[in-house]
Amino acid sequence: MSTIDRPALKEIVWHQMRQDLQSLIPWFANKELLLCPACCRPLTFDDFSLEHIIPKQALACDPPDVRAAIPQNERSGMTLLCRKPLVIKGRRIPGSGCNSWKGKHYDPFLRELIRSVNPIIAKFNSRHQLALFSAGYLGLFRQFGYQIALLPAGLLMRHQFFHPNRFLREVPLDCQMILAGEALSAYDSDSRKYWSEPFKITVDGYSALLILRNMAFRLPLSRDPLVPIARALPYAPSKYVFRPDLRTVFEL
Image (cartoon, rainbow, N blue to C red; front, side):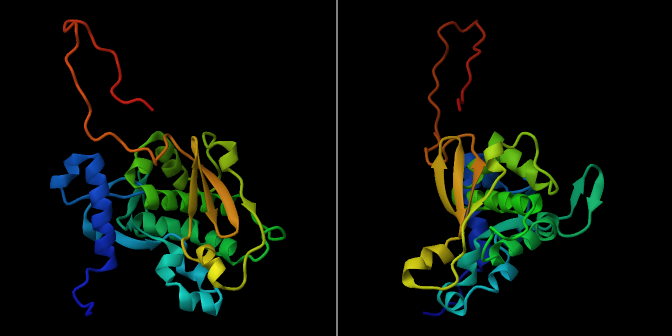
């Protein structure tokens, strides 16, 4: 079958993210806008670019049989990040928005992590941990959508994205470490999952356990993203209409 008329990958991801955002915030249904997963600025289609969560350069050293069997996009994980210049604390940041920010501050360290065969003897530092933390956030967003980005834990992870030199005090201690073993160096049918889906995610209470190949780490959560979100809230008038109703509508 001809693939000439198939929509571009960017358009596919754009519509998937738009649909998810509209399901949470109906206001966006009549606006041709999308929130960037990192900075959450409402921007147009042209202000976004495709982003490989695990950078392409990090995957270039995968074994030849892995590269032949599994497409690069599958091994990296795809999302959209903005390319509109950032302004932080009144200062315009050179580059193309969150896409350039990730490329400058995190991609080099992700490459070193992915290419390391034996992390036990490798010389890793906090910049590597922060790179994995931020990539993990994008992986979590890619799987569960805007319910991750728009909750308090997502706000914390987005704040951390813009602090590449040290962990914020609010980040739980168990989310500031990496557990790792020796990496695989060959491909076979039994190890396909190791090479393909970049992030294997397990929800565990108020945190998520992520596994990226031979590395495991945690990210904070505000709620279990596997539990459906109510789309219609029951409402009944208060029994005493002249009393202030001090109850909350949402409970975490």
